[in-house]
Amino acid sequence: MTANADLKVACVGAGYFAQFHYGSWARMDGVHLVASCDSDITRARATGLAAFADLGQMLAEAQPDVLDIILPPVAQANAIRAALAHGVRWIICQKPFCVDLAEAEAMTAEAEAAGATIVVHENFRFQPWYRAIKRLLEDGVLGDLHQVTFRLRPGDGQGPRAYLDRQPYFQTMDRFLVHETAVHWVDTFRYLLGDPQAVYADLRRMNPAIAGEDAGYILFDHPHGVRALFDGNRHLDHAADNHRRTMGEAAFEGTAGTLTLTGDGAVHLRPFGELTNDMVVPPDSFDGFGGDCVHALQSHVVDAIRHARTPENTARDYLTVERIEAAIYASAQSGQKIPL
Image 1 (tube, rainbow, N blue to C red):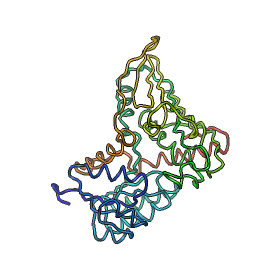
Image 2 (cartoon, helix red, strand yellow):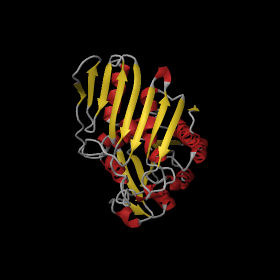
Image 3 (tube, one colour):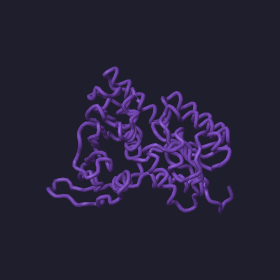
Image 4 (cartoon, helix red, strand yellow):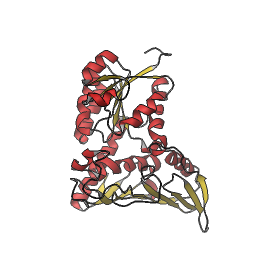
């Protein structure tokens, strides 16, 4: 790839969530989306790109600069190894990243040994309300931050058909709420608050139609005495026209005030001792997923490639999220707080 050439991007996976990846690449300057691969060739063809059912063939013919892996964890390691074997040096991989910590560590080491960079597609930290909250916290609008709470309430987990219409493999995941969903906030809390020092979890399965847990509490001890609570229940909802925009509501409470995130993506600030609040971030108007966070992440990666910078969410950094996830499950099993 020369300095002024378009960045060639190929994608493997054309399921439900892939639409947000393809849509983002297609409206990005300096990027040429060259091919799509899926085990169901009809889904790859539906993208309008050169379509393949075999990943090795796609990589050999398309020779992309970037491979975007939009696959479930069980298929990611093979896709990463195929990319490395064909000389791809930039890989974006959906989360959950690999089937477990051991496999994630192995894939990270193999990529590094080949001189390649994997970026985990952990996009929630790129949602515009969290970027704004980060700036507000850094500006000190809350004084000393004491507590953070996120209440996950997507309302999509009830009944025997839960998840089947969108991502049916959710039903068969032995580890679900944390491995698939709560890791978004493990990463977001890290981004906002720093790495946690201990974790305690109480998890449960409420829908007998699924294999894994779908509700629970996770309490994090963050630096400077900050406590963060992830309160998740996929059966319940929150006030929003689109429950997948924020997927719930959040509160950031400090000695000088409280920031509240609502289901429309707006953020309000109530100064300490006051009865009213001011809107400091307006409601989100994007009609796709999560405030266009997929596009924000992928644009960030392209910028990093173009300017030889280290992007956020490299696989090496993301292993911390995987280790925290393992500690969460260990805490839920033992009933004890786990130091990190």
